[in-house]
Image (cartoon, rainbow, N blue to C red; front, side):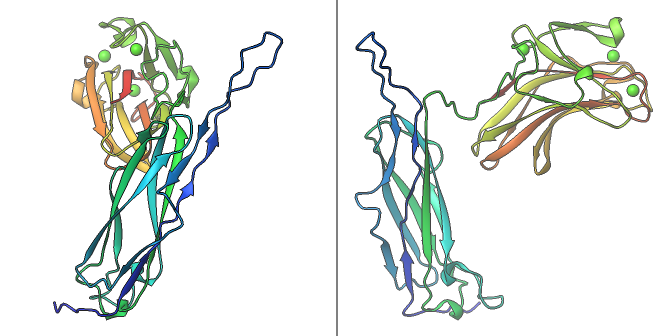
Amino acid sequence: MQKKLLAGMSVLILLAALVGGATMALFTDSVTNAGNAFTAGTVDIEVGDDPTVPVHVYNMAPGDTYNGSFTVRNAGTLELRYSVSAATAGPLFAVQGVAPGNTPAVVALTANHTNVVLAPGGLATVAFTVYLPLTAGNDYQGDVGTVNFTINAVQTANNPLNALVNGGFEAGNFTGWNVNFPELAQVVTTYQADGGGGPIYTASEGGHFAVLHAGAEDVYTEVSQAVVLSAGQTLAGRAAFDAVDYLPFNDDAAVVIISGGPLATPWAKSVAVVGNYGQSAWESWSWTAPVAGVYTLSLRVRNVNDDSLPSVALFDANVIQ
Ligand SMILES: [Ca+2]
Ligand SMILES: [Ca+2]
Ligand SMILES: [Ca+2]
């Protein structure tokens, strides 16, 4: 492919910081027992010394990479956690013309941009690149683009990152979980397989675990919980399956990760796997988020082919690592 050198191209990179401010709801005490004043802390994040000054990059040629950075500062009185996102605008970042030669510039945040903790007064540098591909065509000559960086900050106090509530069911109930058929789901301390004739299970972690019974044919009994994960964070847990049925009534159970639709199945069992009336021991499963996002952890079991001899799944020790 012919590489086209462009002249006279200018790129405007505008640093516009949206300051995510929040005021913590502590309180001021003014009762007669003097001297007990409490003052609300503040969450306040700033960009650079003067966030209104834009960075200008002129004369980018296809193949050029601009390496930029800016500084963020915790100007409040509370420790905070911030995340940065970048949004582009302008023709330099838009697809133009027809392929080949219609690849626009791209911006990437390269460091320190997700869930970075800053103490009061603390500084951090956010690095980014703007890259104009060699395959950019003449349509991009002279074009201008703008990048807006948004920094959202929240307090870290009493605000644990990515909490999974009651992941090991130690509350003794389903606090934190969505349960679609409560009559088919219990939190227990022991479970005996095969309706009381099989092996006895105790908790894999702590003293309690969840037991889900299959219900109507081909309908999952499910408990689920949404969690926020950063890229590279891992969800893990333990599960076991008690086949109460025989083939061809291939009841099954699974741990499913949902984001929009089903994304991954890090654990699954069925009658076919454990054998007629069989069961598995507690097994560990894990799954790592490829990108930051909100994911739903679904624990489930169902009857297959009919609704009799409902099989059972056990779940425990769900954690974010
Ligand atoms: Ca437990
Ligand atoms: Ca069994
Ligand atoms: Ca069944």
